[in-house]
Each structure stands twice: as C-alpha cells, then as structure tokens.
Length: 264
Image (cartoon, rainbow, N blue to C red; front, side, top):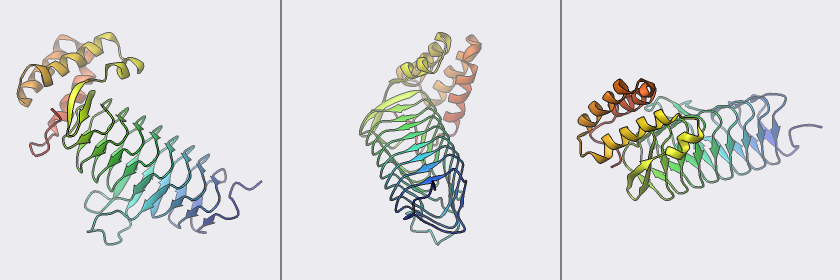
C-alpha cells in the first residue's frame, strides 16, 4: 500500500525517503527534504527550503517552512531545519530564517511541541524541550535543551532561555532566563530553580546543591550580576562535581547584554 495519499500534492523535486507517510490534502514544495520514518498527517503545508529529519510526527494542519514575517525579507532562500523524533501538534507554524539572522530557523531532536506553537525566523531550539499549547517565540530567540515552556508563554525577540529552565502558564519573557530557572508572571520574574526536573534527569544531590547555591547568588543575596558571577565561580572551586553546571551558567551570563538583562 502506498504511503502517500492520492490527494497529497508533492512537487516532483521534493526529496522524501521511501518510508515517509503523507496524509490527505497535504502540500509539499520542491525544496523540501524529509527523512526516514517521518509521518505527515493531512492538510499540512511544507514549503520553502525545509529539511525534516527521521522519525518525526507532524499532525494535521501544520505549516512548516513558509516565508518569515520580517518586513525586510526579500525572498532569499533561507531555511527551516528540523531534527529527529520530534512531535509537532496541530496548527503549529514554523518559519524560515532571514539573511540578517543567519538564514536558518532550527529545531533539534526529541522535542514535544503542542498545538499552536510558533517558531519565528532565526529561532534556535535545542533538544528534549516541551512547548505547551500556544507557546510563541518571536524572532531570533534561543532555547536550550530540556526547557519547558508553559501554555501561552510569549517570548520577546532576541531573548535567550538557558537549559533546564521552565516557565509557568501565561508567562511573558522580556529578559534572558538563565539555566535552571523557573519563572512566572507578566513580565516574568524568577521564582525558583527547576529542582524536580533536575532530579528526574538524574542530577546528583551534589549537583542540585550547586544549582541551589547559584540561585542564592543570583536572586537571594542582593548581589550585582558581576558579583553573582564571582560567587558562582567559587561554587565549583568548593564542589568540583558542579563544574559543568557552573560553566554553563557562567557562559550564559557572559552573553547577557545590559539592554536585555536576565529575569529578576
């Protein structure tokens, strides 16, 4: 039995692995490449220079690779690149990048993207993330691995969200969210660290204690950002097992600009 429904419209130049499934009334453009085992449901539109990896599940009424919504866009052949084993639910919209932003919008591997999620141009999303319904990213947003965005989270352009961070429902992000931080509000404010998520991912008690110490330095001890970074660096000196987490935090904070700042 054919894996391509008779009503699907697929450009002859598109490159689909022989194991790809395509549902009724789906449209696939000439510059699309789709890897092995990926299933595309009905009424989807996949266009532009879009590459989709292996074993993804794309549900009905999804739009991937359409022109970005940047008014400067002049038809340049920018890209959308999606990794492996992602689940993309109904009515999600992911756009291609822009020349000014590097030309690529990117989604990693093993992400769980619920209904109505939006990735604007030049966004870079890592792996193992969860975007709840209606989580929306403006252009140039960067999201680290294992991030969880609560339903109706809205992220301002150029904001960065560090690995293992989490937002509550209806959060509005104008500033960077450092790794491990849980935030909530409009605008969002830091509330705690994602300790339960870290336990589920196998963090040792020693590493979790290091994360607690970083939270204290950033949010509890009334330090400047530079002072907090000095305190955080000292954590790894006293607890060498926290070095990887400290390095990740310091690298993230070193890229935070005064104009954007971090959630407080």
